[in-house]
Length: 138
Image: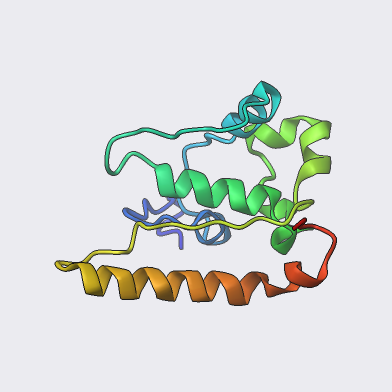
């Protein structure tokens, strides 16, 4: 995705893996993973203005922790979080359920409800293997 050996700025793209796979310009904010992990908070609220990287941040967290991305060191090589052996060992070790409402744009309640139901059905399909695992409790 580079043009003339210069990285492309992919405006509006909120998919961490895609940005890294296509060698797009990316401002490394992965030290947030280390800070967040070490803080030990039970709940974390990411309250930032619109277009301030909340969805990209969630995508980064999903790629880092999710078993779906186990072995994808290529996504994090050269980034801050990978400077720590402890965090290289954590990458790809957890079941992650991630929900984003960023693409629910609607002018009425029923359409928004339908879109949300679709997101939840996709989420269930992607994670139905968790039901047969020891990862969840009643």
